[in-house]
Image 1 (cartoon, rainbow, N blue to C red):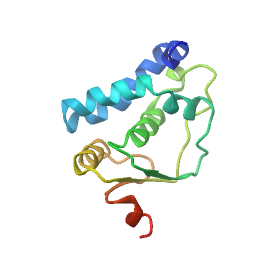
Image 2: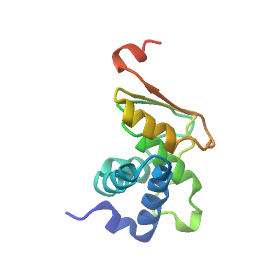
Image 3: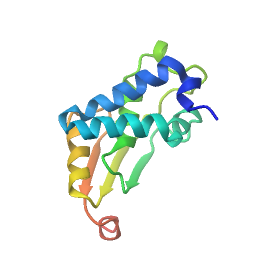
Length: 135
């Protein structure tokens, strides 16, 4: 089985680099974790390659960790069409993103990565998801 980056080629690697770069403000661990996770967990690529996130989606990411999904989607928004993986639909434009994370260190990494405003609101709450979603 090949990795998804083999099919996406340089465009996939550029997307990983752009999404991982957002974590430089957090710490070196966050950058390396982002690179590893985005390169090896196919769920991120599948979400974009198959158009699983529609435009206007209100994303609730329970257990968001360091906010990789938001960083991934923001990186996709910033890609030039010429550097987008061939055959993938245009990147989605969500309405909003809310990440809930129990671990304070991960929530802080997510906030640092998402500190620069994007084209849609992204919020990270450090909370127990069982209580936070009811708010």
